[in-house]
Image (cartoon, rainbow, N blue to C red; front, side):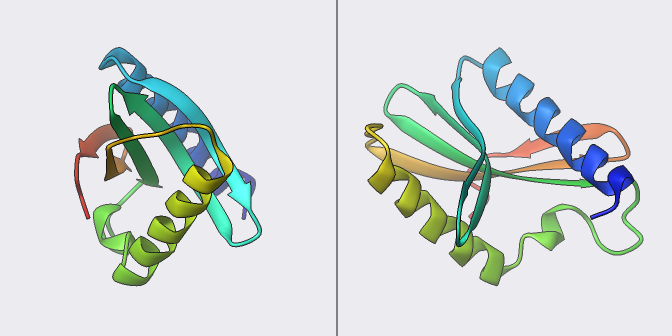
Length: 114
């Protein structure tokens, strides 16, 4: 990944993590990696564990950030969330999947996106 694209992704992840912290969530992990892939942001508030996929774009010329989270990607994120829970002492009654879309510097968090 080019430095510019990686920098854009990191700034999007920073913005998403800050959003969760500002809304009373504890950010448990960022860029949690296993062989199968990576979770961008994992946060918790009460009994709710949130797994957030962050997508950042400078333009929607190739589709919106939300459109980039395809059903295939959603399934992979669900598998990774199960791996995170299996590897972690964290327990949650509800697991919610959000998408943080950053388009041209503006953050939109879509809760319960899939």
